[in-house]
Length: 445
Figure 1: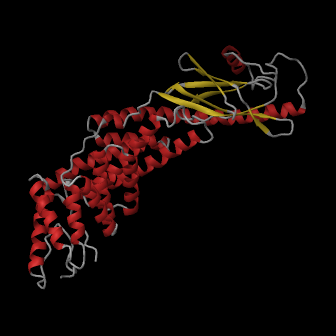
Figure 2: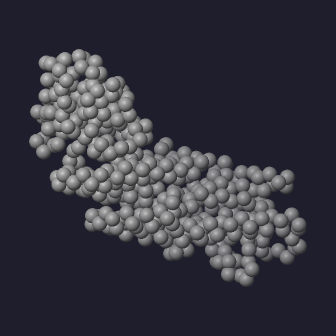
């Protein structure tokens, strides 16, 4: 029979590094695929197409070429810039799109039409944009006076239609980006000053403008977690049940927002990498570090929720912690997460798996107090009572080693005494100490 924790309270200290909630990269990637329409209507991949990024909010020009698969990538574009992207290729009509926020819309594909391979200058692009009723530059760079064929007209109109859709999409993205950049800065400043309510309000405004902005979910999760820790500790000291419940609601919301942060971050990474060549030298370190930050924040949200007996979905918690443990290379951080994995498994009723998780941590670090306490509680859940002696000894060892200010110390003392009495008087019904485990129906030896 499973013994549930009634109260596994602990005064938790949270050290939040501000850099973990700020956008670390000062550059972003621009990428896409270039194809050329053939006479039969099919599209062929274009190699060696010249792709030029003209920054329009301030002066700047960046250039790259497509590879043999038609893919182009420029990984060093200044973050937050607005660009014109112009593409030219031998035997193709030049194309360009304007108002592109590459950090918001990194992937931009081009379907070129046949032409003479003209390469437009920025001045020509601006002149084309300024001309009344101007659309895309005509095949041959606009220098010819020949009659436009029916096929060329259809291709031009289709390209103009697609460009109009892109421009409208870019306009919406740019409007959302203005809001996101403003609230991102304001939210981070409020968080740094511990104005948690204000920070959450700012992040929520940004998420209304862009409901798929991963970093805002990440930052909101961290702020909710910090607010929960502060309020939970105060409520614990004041013995304020209502305030403690409010803090638990924040712990739960922190986990929910961390889940969304990981989800949308992965979608961005997937979109960026779809059909693109691998980064030179293997995996991109910046991407790896960003992923680890998201996984760490999600794992920590669940860890604190479990430590404070906040109800969470056990399977989600297990997955979150396991994924972080797999990705983390720091032994100390990995061991800390593995101990919380035992908590998640225990809460989900997977007692044997929880025991194995705690034992794994203690095998490499016999003095890990979180694993020691967790294993003692998990062993005490054995309905046969066969593991009561080991459970008692672990909890007593935890109580002897842990700091006197840790509320778990008294819980461990009380539970160790209860188990000791049970061992000595197996036939006698004993009352389980309040705040430890629920044992009114627990079988005796």
